[in-house]
Length: 252
Image 1 (tube, helix red, strand yellow):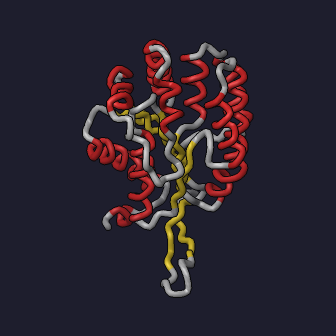
Image 2: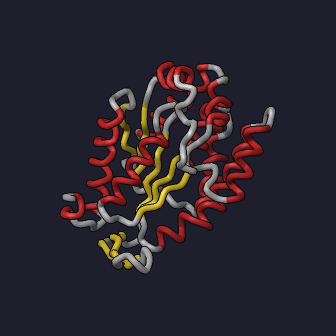
């Protein structure tokens, strides 16, 4: 049975012991979308908001958030070219390590895990955009995650012409961030240089996937940032209440 639990956390000798709210079985929330749609910004906003409600929450991103994942990301950045299958296998290796090292232990402890990109990114990028076999990618996703499906996937949807212009017109958009989960400029630029059709195929893939399962929440990313954040929080709040978190938790 789903339900809210409380976990005692010690924040130091001079701090009072505090209780963070956990959810039986944990909750996995993933953020998806193309380049420049604001995934990292909105994931970070949600992370801090849930923490302010006293909900035990962690944040991670793919590929990365582990030594192996960071090494793989750095290798892919520097590679001149690679096949869709080679890229997929590398991403799946990083994903399997992240699941083993961080995500599954956190979920087992009842935490809310906010993940910037997950299996759907591999389907959209290596499948729809790069032409990889969708059935093969699906099987590899299944293996890497042991079939773990998000409770909620937030898709930030935006016309690639607009999202790419955000990156081009704001070169410092991702610079100077102290948040280690943010993707750096070099990652953004690697994809920005690809043809517009590539990005349109990514969007098409995401929108097609979003029609197949109820876990998807498609949110227009052309709105003001605070409106996007409000729409995300509304959907997350509903999910957490369904999972046993008391409504009073959100009345801080």
